[in-house]
Length: 107
Figure 1 (cartoon, rainbow, N blue to C red):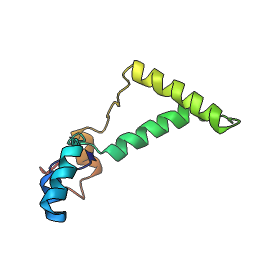
Figure 2: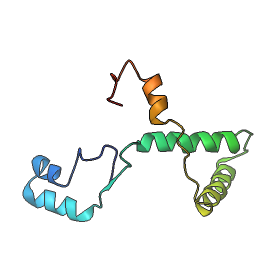
Figure 3: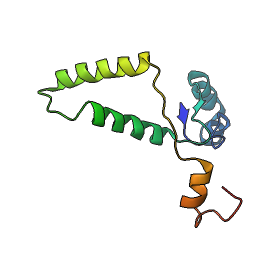
Figure 4: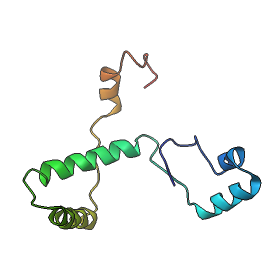
């Protein structure tokens, strides 16, 4: 189970929603993973979809099988080179861009 917000959910939450037996069963079947503290899994997914679209899906593909094959090859290449996201939104940039949302010293 991938959790988008660090420390907002834990296996203990199952005990609030289910009987102890059901909660124990569920927590033993799951493995919990938290996304990085200063990013969102949704943001990461959106960036990868953008990269896929810009570098790959800019042309007509004749069928679902071709799309699956091409995307699979693209995914293998991205994984082989261990592609990462280069975050360019730094704290100084955030202070300028988000100054209305975060008063001085809170970003």
